[in-house]
Image (cartoon, rainbow, N blue to C red; front, side, top):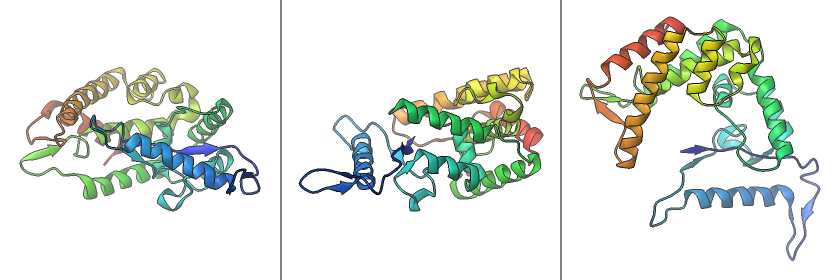
Length: 247
């Protein structure tokens, strides 16, 4: 799926209105535009759909506004966001729209991710979130292994990477230059946050998992592999999870 957040920079959003036979305030107009974009992306056609769109990463999740001002987004990230929302911010990038808003978003992302953090608290938050996710989402059983949510799988690699980024970005800005796991792991190795050997092991495991998952997705099949599949990378990821996050 595609996780989206819509931002605007209208300082007088509630005061202004859009003219016409039936004027509406800017906030309503932007929300309707955002909803139309979501519908375009998610509509089922004879050729399939472009994306399944998820909007839960916006400030305050499902209860939040569909479109937020860039300044309120920044304040939320600085003051109210949970650790898992900062984990999501490590993967976030500006994709389209007004370049001024894009630059402001980049500034917010940099300020939030480069904030010095309590390492123990960060570790507890990330490990706690991962445990909850496994309990709710992991479909592994005696016969199969969930390549995304199972122990030693894709999400474990992503959480290891996000933990290291949030822990060490305040010491080296290069760590947050990219939003994808591969280049983040490479930047972390260059910064000394992880060994070159461990970087290579995580990237290789991630690549193998992703290739298999993409093939299954094209076949419209689930992400459950035979229980004994990927034994080597799974053991490697579990070892590094234990070493880095101590769980």
